[in-house]
Length: 424
Ligand SMILES: [Zn+2]
Image (cartoon, rainbow, N blue to C red; front, side, top):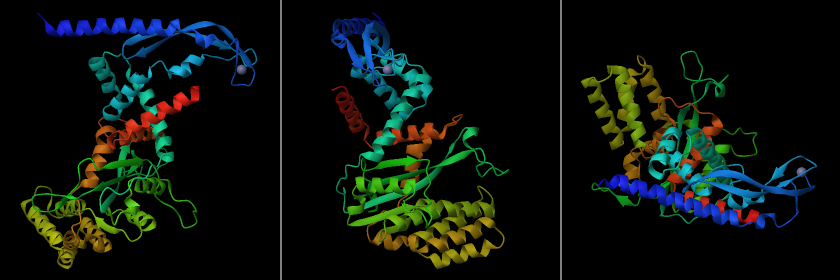
């Protein structure tokens, strides 16, 4: 007895029977041809011109629909009202398969998505079609995110908001004329900016605040954070950050904390949007910076360098910034990394008072923001061989952020309601 052969065979047959039943039921209903004429998009009347077939992929397998077709003499166009009613207008994927493609492509590459859909669900959808479908959903989500706010009260007395940027590899055509970090001054990436909001009421065994599981949301895009003094409107990323803050009740929280690395745009934005919020440089990032300086001075994997870095980390933890700055200054004239780090710490001193922050029970982070950036962007968009267009990257980023933030279900519900309303 080969159970695997029995179960997979039985599933295939059961699905095929169900597909034929659904097909018969849908095709038996010819109410879509009730009217002899219907108004065409061009404003003239379109006349019923028989039933036409279209094969669509459903979770049961392919089914062939016969739908009333209306032809318009004036514009030579035509349409099938049922396609809109069934949610298959302009696509050959059923709503359930569309949803499946969106969810899986939010997590893995389009090629892997195609394989998984075939392997797990027995639904054949090519990688290109997964890509088109997921990007289509992503574009809808970009709109949805801009228009649906649904503010919640803050989940905790202290709310945290982190901002970060990360480079995503782009197709050459998206980079023409852009300055970058390549030796010849050209660019290979565009920067995705991410805002993440969370609470940290829980404590680890040592009593330090830790991020509350399930409290994290993300929103990100390839957008500018810079707004000039002459600009009336906030930059695109500032508006995104504002929306996310409102959505999460960050702006209403008793205590608001903004976390980021040393990047200037983050603190400019924090000043602009959240004046009065506590600003903290992510401790993990600051330590990483010091480790990089150690490597620059002593070379990589050097015991002396590691010792030097450990001492600097300890000074940072203990709030001994004067001692720390002194130790770095000794190398500033000989090592560019050290000079930059000196500037960075000097500029951010007020945001690096870790003992004081900890005394107030604040999360100074150990890479929460950076980990968020890796999870939301890196693991999906920065894999070997991937090269994106701006529009394609933004669509998949939007899809992934909704999925990771627990917003996909609500989006799908709104989408279904809107589709039904359009038909009615
Ligand atoms: Zn027409």
